[in-house]
Image (tube, rainbow, N blue to C red; front, side, top):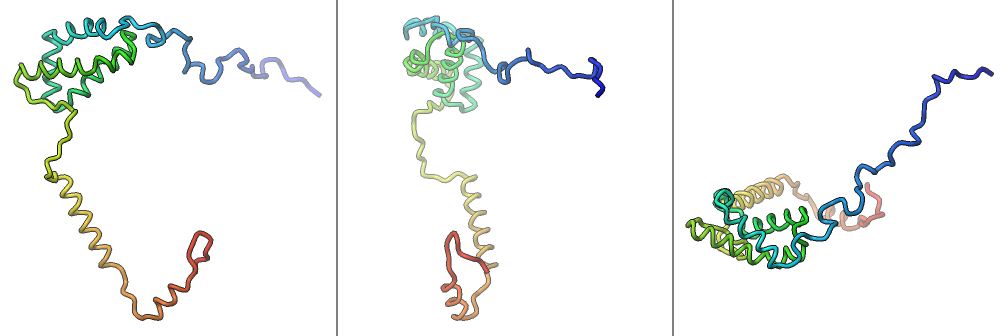
Length: 173
């Protein structure tokens, strides 16, 4: 029996990375795994208010508000981004949400921009054109399906269909 030369034997990656190792990080390596920079709601608001009131930020904010994005969504995005950066905990973020929403509402009101607060239920009673067209199309397709169904010719066919077993394990003919 002849031995293979050393160059023909493939090396096994024994010292390679463990599968999934690239998806993990050491504990404390992420900002949200460390103590928050601002531990109380008051400290977090002292961080937010000057940044939200900057003219560059308010100009962009008003553009977003004019697009119809609810103020609750904007405030939630702001606080969630800060949680991910380790500025404050999620608990503090939830506590300061009403204050941020009111601040955004104040900015929109002073700029005379119509806004959607995102906390009211809009029940206008009217059906939008998109919903109405979907309903009409559904009704048309239902009418077309009803017209294509064959009409039963006699009572014997009905009786025969009733006698057929039904259920999960019933045989089909």
